[in-house]
Each structure stands twice: as C-alpha cells, then as structure tokens.
Amino acid sequence: MDPIRVLIVDDSPFMRKAIERMLVAADDIQVVGTARDGLDALEKIPQLKPDIITLDVEMPRMDGLTCLKKIMIDHPMPVLMVSSLTQEGAQATLDALAAGALDFIPKESSLASGSILQIQQDLQEKVRKLALSPRFRKPAARPAIQLPTRPLVAPVRSSGTGLPGLMATNPMAEFLVIGCSTGGPKALQDLLPAIPKSLPVPCFIVQHMPASFTKPFAERLNTICEVQVKEAEHGETARPGTIYIAPGGIHLNYRQRGAQAIIELNPEPAESLHKPSVDVMFESLARECTKQVLAMILTGMGSDGAKGMQALKAKGAHTLAEAEESCVVYGMPKAAFERGCVDQVAPLPEMAGILRRHFGI
Image 1 (spheres, rainbow, N blue to C red):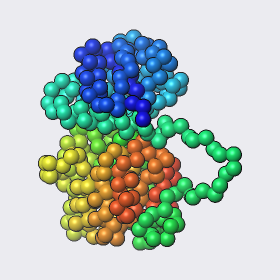
Image 2 (cartoon, one colour):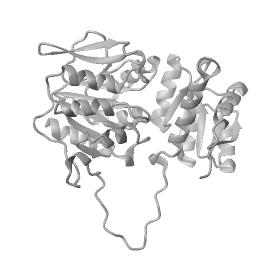
Image 3 (cartoon, rainbow, N blue to C red):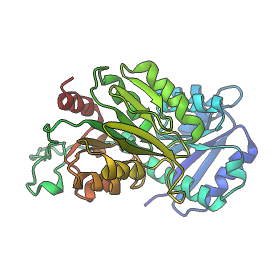
C-alpha cells in the first residue's frame, strides 16, 4: 500500500519542521512538501497531489480559513487544522470545521514540549484515519450489470434476523444523550438545527474538545438551533428542550434527585483517555437514570461510548449509531455496532427525522 502523502502548510519554519519530524517517523506516512502560507499551498497542491493537508489557521498573505474554502472548491480533500487554543483560535477553528476541515490539532507549546511521543502518536493516527475518511473516498466504478444489494441501513447483529434494525418507538425516551468526536462539530451543526424547540426531553452531548472550545461551540450552536444549547454547569437541573454540551477537560455525569436530573461535573476518573468521556456519561445514566434513555453515537475516532452504550442497552435504552457512509471517521459507531448494542444504524441526514418521529415533534 502506498504511503499517505501529506502537505504541511504553516508560516512558522519551526512548526513545519516539528510536524514533519513527527509524521516521517511513521513508515506509512510521507511528507511530500511544505508551504509557508495559503497562496503557496494552492500553487503546490496540483503539483504534489497530497492525500491530506495540515493547515495552519493564522498565516500572512492568505490565512488558513480562506485557503480551506478554496481547497474545498478546487481540490476537495481531507484537511487537518493546526489551531491555537486561545479564544480567537477556537472561533477560527470552529469556522474551519464548519467550512469542511475534518479535525484539528493544538499548536503552540503542545507541539514543542510535553509528551512528545503521545502527541506524535495522536497526530499520526489522525492523519491515517482522516486520509481514508468516507467523506472523501472516491466511489468505486459501478459494474455494467447491477446485482441486488443490501439496504443502506446496516443490519444490526443483535436482532439475529439479518434485516435492518429499527429503533423502538415505545416507550418514548425521556432523556437524549449523544457522543461524538472527529467530525462531530460539523455533524452536530447539521443535526441539531433540524430538531424543533418542542423537544420534550433534556439532551446531554459529549464532543471531544479542549476546554477553551466547548463554550464558544455551544454558543455557536445556540445561534443556529431552535432548542436552547449551552455549556453544562455543575449542579444545574437538566430541563426539557435544552441541550447541554459537556465542558472540555472534565467529565459530565448524570445524577438523579427524586424526579430531577442533575448535572455533575467531575474530574474523575482522571486516567480516562478522553475528558470528557462518552463512556463516563453513558455509564452514569446506566447507573442512576430511572427514565427511558435514547443514546446516539456519531462519527469519531476510537471506541469511546461503545462500553457505555452497551451498559445503557442492558438497562433497556433505545440506541442509534451513525452509518459508515456519512461518518468522517467510522470508529466510535463501529465499536458500538460490534458490541451488538445498536438498535438502528442510519446516515446522519436521516437522524433528525428519526428523532422527530420518535419524540412526535
């Protein structure tokens, strides 16, 4: 298999060299070139034909966002943003994710110090997964004679029937929980505005993001959604028609006090790979929630949420996972599917309709 071809775009010679050094340490990744700004990148893309681009946000002559928009028009391909963790960097990165970038890596000191080995492994894994993203995968040539094919909605193993799984409509869920990672910000910006303000239940969402990103992300979603969207706060009561985004750097837990659902933010378990963690949130509902739950897993790298969804399913929850065809990275939904705890698999464009029918809104 040919190595993954990467073009690094950054105005800092130090950053270009640091990213290149981490990528070329992998045998299956090849850095085919570097560019000092957006204009330089646009000239080099047709010549170098990269499979994926790492793109700095702030650059002279042409910034990353302007360059990204031109890439998506003229040379659609996976783009990994290199982002500052400042408030301004968060806003610019969210703009980039909305414009077609698949994910981001933190810039500044995190690439120059700290756990270099872990950062290197994360960067390599993101490049591998994003370069093969279904969103940019070229469709295979169709045969001259079409044979019957299976439905697009994948059969769910736990049904034992070989037929497409369908999520139960009764009893109607009293709580909605969603987990996502790579590709999640764009997926949520597509899904949530299609949910009416009459949503009769509270919703918790864990999206893997740094602490400086989750509040501006929630505020952005709130401007485009009919339902209220906010960053979750410790001790507040979860209310119907409100979507709570888990803050970065801390876990969101469900706690039940009588008939009330209370949000608990807790740093434990500290050793968790992700903070916030989808598994931690799902498992807290499996332990404490006496209400009917609808749990969803959207696009994301890794397996976070699969174990928690299995625990919820064992308690009778309705479960829904995003289909591979619409995922940026088919990791988290696949892990849940392989555990046999998914009722229904559906592409993202169909999910809002599934939710509206389930909740009768």
